[in-house]
Image (tube, rainbow, N blue to C red):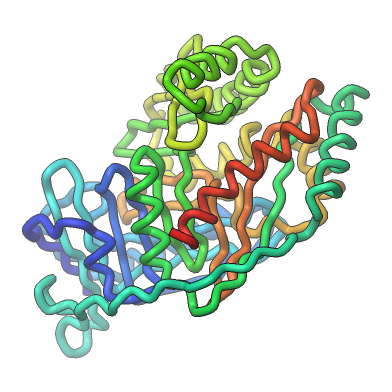
Length: 408
């Protein structure tokens, strides 16, 4: 039994969360948060995992009796999901929260799910559990992940040699960092810090994977779709003059423009068979975030049929922005050089409703939280002109997003 009702503006969505292990998708203070589990499944690894996930969702949603007084994207039953970067890796998951609180475009709603046997399990918004106090994680200690910094620089140098030998055109290499906190990590604190400092990003939480990604993989609303392609990065300047100069340098960089072009073309190739309209800008724009600047291309289109947002995700992942080009060779090089399983890092993360609408991002600037431990991730696109020391510095800058979230 699923019931969605309009509610008064709840204010900050994160402060309404009663548990330290929530589900969330927030952008500029709007979006969806959830808690509890009405249904959950581990998606089997393999090339057809998105098709398997869509079938599971169709069956799960079909069994629900829905009373939805709003009938908007994100109302009725909603599943949050996280898929591993590598299709052969286990760990992909879909969860239908028992309670979802949402706000968008001046409207707010609450969805609750009962077992259908004795009335609602979750009551009105006013009767939901009071939020538990936030517990700060305390002192954080860091240690190397799969590779030390010098080892990762060596991997970058090997990737550059492979590119210059014409094995491939681009590869995205990631590195991880391990964090150990004094106390159990309350995910709500991370969400609050990330959404406040990076409102332009999509702050997410699903099954312990938490972060703030600047990259919208796909948004589906009916037949309309949108995507934001990011590739090409520089740091912010120390003052306004240096900031503008760095942005101009990024825009003029042949290496970064080429990296961006590969990412845009991979999205174009993935979406063209699914759309009867597709709009791809001829030139990127600058996306300026508190710590970095990116080359960005907003893509929009219209689907030709009833493909769900998961169908589009399946067609797009992995893009050249997180894998490389050509994709099959880039995936081989990633497996050879990274020395780790990325898990959910750089994989699709987001939500989907029973209509097939939803929003999915690429899990960047993120960490996998388990108790008082966190595994943090960052990476960058490697091209023929890449310098290992510069790439390490860029990855370290990206890692500071989650370090800030942990340390405050």
